Amino acid sequence: MVQIHRLFRRLFVDAPVLVRGVGVGDRTRTAVVAAHVRDIAGGLHRHHRGEDLLLWDRLEERSPACALHVGLMRSQHATVADLLVRLDALVPAWEASASAEDREAVAEVLDEIRAALLVHLGAEEERILPTASLVLSQREWDELGEHGRSSTPRGQMLLLLGWILDSVPPAERAEWLRTNLPLPIRVVWAAVGRRQFAAHRARVYGTALARD
Image (cartoon, rainbow, N blue to C red; front, side, top):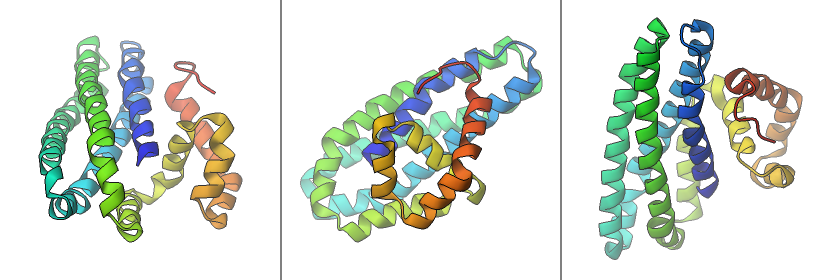
């Protein structure tokens, strides 16, 4: 969970910068960044949906003292969901026009999502995860992970893995792979996924926001 939070922090901190870096009238670049924005917004929605379905009720039932914190989480999810709906309505107009006005409208909503998300993720780590680590079984944690995997479009699975690895410090990536992925997936990543993701990342980020 903490690693997924790290991923979303990075993606949504970068997203408004990427949008504002697109040149006015550059429809090719607009399409690339707009598709990326859709992908990360969809990933965030699926992550929150999994928590809504599989986490909050269990915490309230097993740790009634956590109910106030769960209520805050539900409220913050609703705020982010509303922002994602607004984003979804604005991106097509930017794609169609590649205008400065539509670009800024998308970037401003991403600013709002980033701000809301940074608050939410910090609160979840501080107020929810300590209790959840005590009252959820490993099977239930696995169920959350499986929900995320099964709800991710098949064609995006290796790209999602790439983005997760991209948010892991470089020195820790090999160990993360060994610890978190079975051998067949590691083989597919080494044979296909690494190159596929590198090309995708280069297309999305270009020379902007370069990182190790």
